[in-house]
Image 1: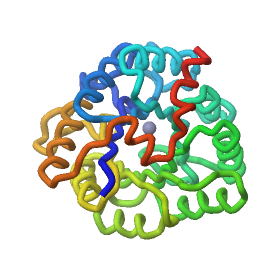
Image 2: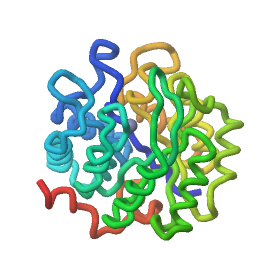
Image 3: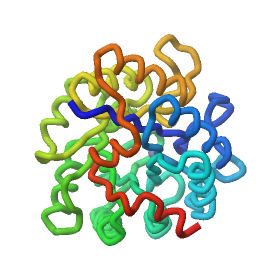
Image 4: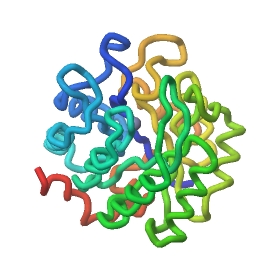
Amino acid sequence: MQKLIITVALTGNVPTKEMNPNVPVTPSEIAEDVNRCAAAGASVFHVHARDKDQKPTLDTSIFKEIAKNIKAKNPDVIIQLSTGARAGKDENDRIKPIDLLPEMGSFTTGSNNLPGIVYENSPSFIKKLGETFGKTGVKPEIEVFELGMINNAQFLVNKGILKEPLHFSFVLGATGSMPGTVQNLSFLTQSIPNGSTWSVAGIGKSEIPLATAAIAMGGHVRVGVEDNLFMPDGSQASNLTLVEKIVRIAKEVGRDIATPDEAREILSLKRENKDRILDLI
Ligand code: ZN
C-alpha cells in the first residue's frame, strides 16, 4: 500500500470560534495549526480564507498572507487553496486562488445541495476552472459529492483540459448529498479511472469511521475542523487531535505516513511547482 497522505481541512467557510474555539481563523492561527499538524504527520493543507469578522472571503491578499505565514515555518508542506462557493459566487473570484499558483486547489466538478445552499458549479464554470488548472499546472483535487462529478472530471480529461492521473476527494456525509457510509465510499472508489489516487473527507460523525475505512482500503484521508468539530467521544476536536487520531489508527494497522515529499510523488506533483506561490507574494 502507498504511504498514507493526511490532508487537514483547517478552517472551512462555516465553523466559527463560537462553535469551537479551536478553529484557526487568522493567517497566524492557521500557520500555527499547520505547524502542529505537520509535526504530527499531516502533509497537505486545505486552506480557506476569512476576513477580520471570521466571514469567508476570496480576497487573494489574505490567501497570500496565509501562504506566507505557513511557508515561513513549514516550507515543505503542500498548500491546497479552496475554490468553494460559500465565500462568494462570482466565478472570476472563485478562480483567483488558482492564479496564485498553489501546488493544489480544490475543484468540485458538479452541483449539489449543502446545508442552506445549492452548491452551484455550472458546466461553463467547470470548464473555465478546469482550463485554469490545465493552464497553470496547479493539481486539482476533484471534490466529489455525487457520482456524476467523477464523470464530469473524466469529460474534462477527454477534452484535453485536465491531465491524468487525477486525484479525487470523496466528500461524504454532508446534509443534502451522499451519506457517509463505507458502502458509498467503496462504490465511488470503484468508479474512478485506473491510475487515479483518492482520499476521503467524511463530514461530521462519519469523519473518523470513513477515514479508518480509507486507511484499510489503501486510500488517503482528509480530516479537520472544516468537516467535523467533535471527536468520536463527543469532546471538542482540534485539527491536531484529529490528525493525531488518524496517525494512531494508521500505526495500529501498519500503514506508514507520507512526508510532504512522499505525498508529492504519490500525487504526481511537479517539484518545480513547490514554491511558485511564494513568487507572487
Ligand atoms: Zn474546503
